[in-house]
Amino acid sequence: MAVERTLAIIKPDAVKRGLTGDILSRIHAAKFQIVAIKSVQLSRTEAEGFYAVHRERPFFGELVEFMSSGKSVPMVLEAEGAIAKWRETMGATDPAKAASGTIRKELGTSIQFNCTHGSDAPQTAAFEISYFFAGSELS
Ligand code: CMP
Image 1 (cartoon, helix red, strand yellow):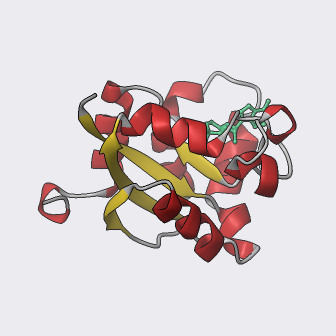
Image 2: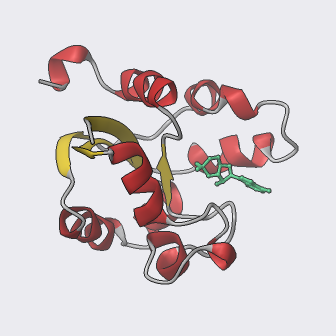
């Protein structure tokens, strides 16, 4: 399997609840390399741009409000098959449907407040990584 990079975000719900360290420990335990990491508060415009693919969805307004409501922690994770591996580590979008032992099952509180984000495909990962990180931060 090829080594890949994916964009992960610890979302504002998890940061506010003091779960950043817990989630980073799970990332290390799952044997991802953290290539780059930062703490940011997205503006509404930045959140709209990041989630533009969802702009026609009924939850888009709430999602933008939530993602710009506080600090979040975007990072680039590297591993063999990182995109699928991180999605498995997170679990299903809705914590109620996520497998036991996953981050969203154990820490998420609703489909919106699901603690983490992960890219869903190679092209999305390339776009999402470049949304937060310059090439010079990714060597
Ligand atoms: P994420 O993986 O960041 O991708 C899009 C986000 O939209 C998703 O996680 C959820 O936080 C949010 N989302 C998806 N479906 C719903 C929904 N039905 N209601 C509210 N938020 C949703």
